[in-house]
Image 1 (tube, rainbow, N blue to C red):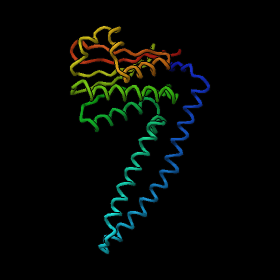
Image 2: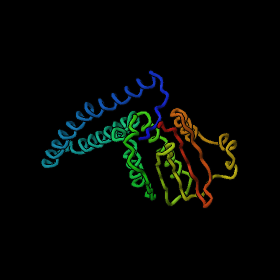
Image 3: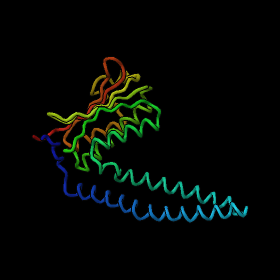
Image 4: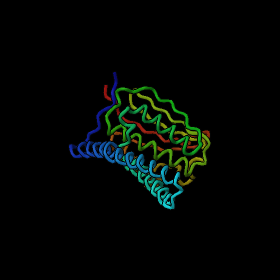
Length: 221
């Protein structure tokens, strides 16, 4: 069976990724459990104050809002450190991200993503997931698209493609050299992530309209 070629990561890079994953797990298990306990206690208090029509009920409601914000902030921090869905492998991580994108934006996001049990290296999965997130965010912000097609194929190489039916690239971005000069931090970061995996990333206009972002990574045989 073909497998994704292991990226040439330094010992420090691997340690850093493992530490991020550990911190994310600790936040979820420890702080998450504490926030859940606080929420349950606060819920009981609010019920009692409501029954008694106590003047402190608005303050308790405000405390609940702050608790909800703290929980959301913790979840965002965990996701930034090490998205929990990464543990399920690349295929499930990409499918989950596309469903999440559709719920957030109401844009159609179709996925063609075969199961790839050989692609489980956390650094690879995290990197490709973050590339997909940035690509979808760019579509939502700039493309004026109605539909996005995401596909993953593993053969002679791994190819991840994100295609949209939007307005395409500005004329000044038609050439690769011009594109590189004009690209923002988001696209530059995606290129760096692909390069860290030993691969490459291209953004080009689609002949029928819209744009196509593709990531090519080497596969070991």
